[in-house]
Length: 415
Image 1: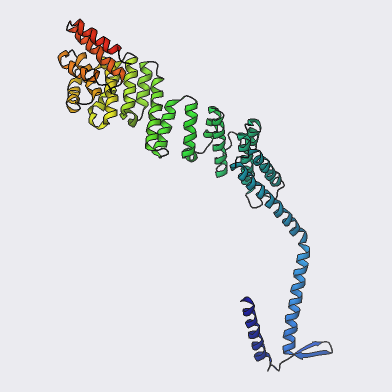
Image 2: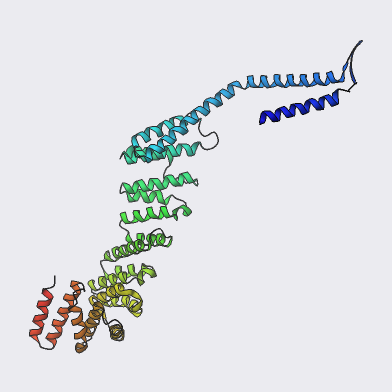
């Protein structure tokens, strides 16, 4: 098709030339001293066009000849750059294919080619070298060669060096991840601390910070970080809830006196304090530290919205109240009586009601809910034993030693 178009254009030019030049009787005259040269205007125009073409071709040829060494250098640089890029692609393919020794060698070839100065003439030389160094360092990390891996990292980044480029941020995140793989929380936190504020709030950075906090045994800091990740929907709802609860449990279990426990509780987010499992763990811990009144105070807001907790949540709060029953006051009576009416089939709730009524010396009302809890095989064994022993104590208060002994034997028979 292109040939046809050129042929048509050639015919058009021929026709136009025949129509314009065929009847042209003009003459071009040139004078030089006593000499005079006459020629037709058509010949002069054709000669001028030919001379211009020859001059242009000669200039182009001279320029090409002069620029030949520069083009040769550019060609050699392009060949080296293509070889370096091919080596970098090979290193990435080998790395993701799990052949780390080959990946390291390919990255070294890419670095050797890049060090010749052929790569990066357009401003991407540093990014190319950083990527090649990171691939080499990542391969060495997989090969457990930490010494050479750290040497590679030092060539790319130094602690305290601030860089806003995306490649630098990624390098620091990778360095923190490798430090966590080495179980070195301090080094990981050092790398994370060098990230700009915006990068430090990214999901990956928060994940690494969470791992570092847990590795350094700082569960409260890990809890706050996990809460941020949960708000960013970095986990599923079930996984987030389980993680937050386990971290809150660690914080509570690390409290060795009531003051530490109170500080830990007040540092929790409102969502953690509203969690029935966390509040129950805190109440049990307070009872173990001989301050059950604090535990009862932490359980009271949950008991006020008892119906909204669900079956499992109500069971946890009720069993925790049994452990902290020594701290209940008279204000708990209307609450437990309402729970007894509203949840007559839940043995954990009935056991808590019976324990509170027994603590307040309402022995006649306490027997029935305690018996329901003690005889329910679905209730956890510790709660059933507690209910039988409370029934034994109730029988002794009524001077019924035979029934007290029967209750003690029933408690001892529970595995």
